[in-house]
Image (cartoon, rainbow, N blue to C red; front, side, top):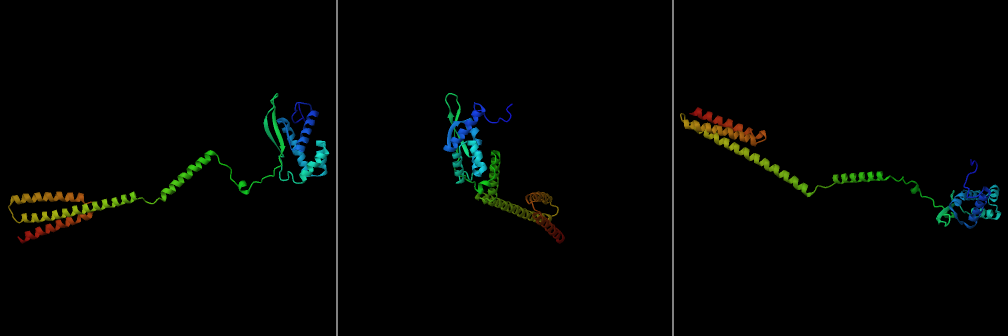
Length: 262
């Protein structure tokens, strides 16, 4: 059981592994860049961050901890001086980066370049911080479809009437006026026919005993009733029926007056 033995073995015993990590840290802080294997670079990354954090504190206790870790008093003094001048001032952590460059011939180990991050920190603007989280693809697709539908409905509501619509409305008005005129003409013709039939009946009634006259009068009466039915079917409004009934009443009055005079 490997209790209290965290970290990688690095292919050697504990004392040799500690010496390897110390030498790698010294070379990185002295040269700002080293070339090593991926496992060794990951193993010393936490030690480098801890050394720079002690340098940012800058007190005697932190300086003594750094000297005990590296074993190089001059290098520790140089590191503390750089940090005091403003190196890593705005960076809260992550003082190193690792680049993979390929694999080593022979054992196929992954070779990397490890270097210190000395660029100034670029702060995010307020607009970037306040930006809403990115939506998923399905949400964006639904939103785009809804926007297109809303835009189409708005365009249909605010679209001006076209020339074809105006022509259609004018045609409907003209057809309605023609139908009304036809109904009025049919009603007038029916009224004229009824008047003529009433006059003819009166003349036939003045000659009694004439069978042919009575037969003609019956035929005219039947024709009159047929014409009245046609007039009622042609005229849709009750106003067209009322004048015909008045004419019949007047014709009856004329017949009665002529009988009385005879």
